[in-house]
Length: 82
Length: 271
Image 1 (cartoon, one colour):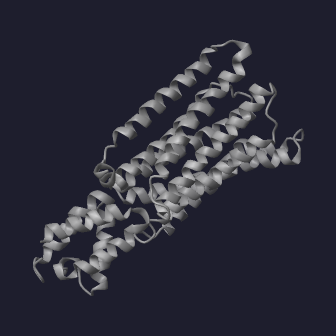
Image 2 (spheres, helix red, strand yellow):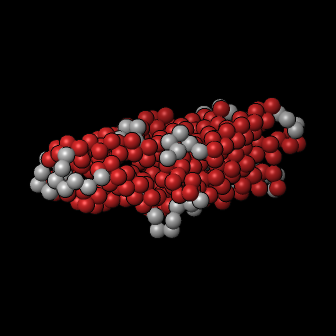
Image 3 (cartoon, each protein chain N blue to C red):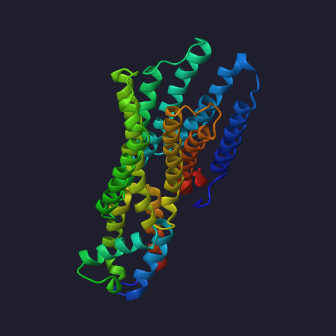
């Protein structure tokens, strides 16, 4: 993981992984709410923000997604960002 | 991830559709003659819906205890189960006792239970998206449509039911409860779920809910047409309306199987 690296990359990666699962609008909501929580815009998210983003994804999607699906998505985002 | 459905899902859809159509055609053909008419007429709702109930229940139980998805799919499968039990009791009156099922009677207990079970299943599914979307606009639009639907149903059958002096008070109340429950316990959550599912576009996790939506709309349409045609005396056993229930409950089972595919696909492949 490249700490503080690739400003647009993190946003794009998350959108690429989440959109097929929940559609683009819902994926956007997940990313945007994480950014707001961090006091940033979506475009300024970095790999250092991933733990907060993952918590947000789990919190928002857990009621309608199994732990398996969420773990797969989180692992995939982490793998692409390494 | 099995976005297009596993072999199990295609088998449930294929076997269920062939079974539903075969049973439907059997009733229409008049096979078995007058003496077996009651038995043949009851086969679709017992065997067809029984198959859908068993498939949906098996899929619901694949989710871990305590998992919210398990609760959602259990409510929906138990809704199908309640219709199945009601149909078995109905068939018992007509086939074993060779008499007309009473109205109100024991079958109505199970047929009425279908509404809260399906309604709670869809509502809990809908509420599971509340952390992503503000559900109030969807619920408001749905409520507005249901108010119109209630008014329309009142004009088509409700007023005539109330005006009928030959029915007992209990029969009148029950005759009104069915269409009202159809609108407010089925249509209301389904429309709100449609609006929410549209917002999720083609997301894999929402695909199972499209099957459920289609199934519940078929059940709603069959219920309403049954009420109207029974009331104006044009309903006949073997009418295409019967297919609405058969395919409606089958679509719930297909949705449940699709949910297992998309939610537990990785674990199932690893097993």
